[in-house]
Image 1 (cartoon, one colour):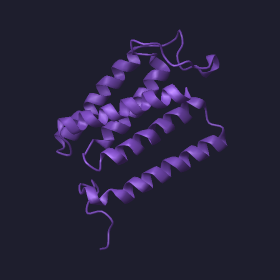
Image 2 (cartoon, rainbow, N blue to C red; image 1 turned 45 degrees about the horizontal axis):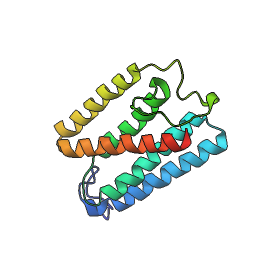
Image 3 (cartoon, helix red, strand yellow; image 1 turned 90 degrees about the vertical axis):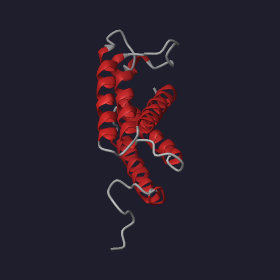
Length: 156
């Protein structure tokens, strides 16, 4: 056949362009639908974090095979943990609207523990499955975490 990719894992770097374009288009459409539907701010921030994550990964994966699975999971888990678990870093959080409910007295830091354990499991599965090395998993996790923090700092 005349497929765009050789396998479902898109191992060959030169074949990643169109899957990345399709993923970016899908996320942009999702964001448009969420805005039009009046989705909660927290959901808009989550999907925007995933979009930022995908943009960074698309650039990085031109020279490295950072784990997109780990990056996507960490981006989502970080955004949820910020929303439910509070601010984990030693500096003041970005200013957020009081009614946004992002960081409040009800913050439960156990969300960060859940995110960490689940991230470790996803990373382990990617290494165990032979799809990534540990450095590739760590790179993906770092990208996911940093993109979520950046989006949170701007939008929340």
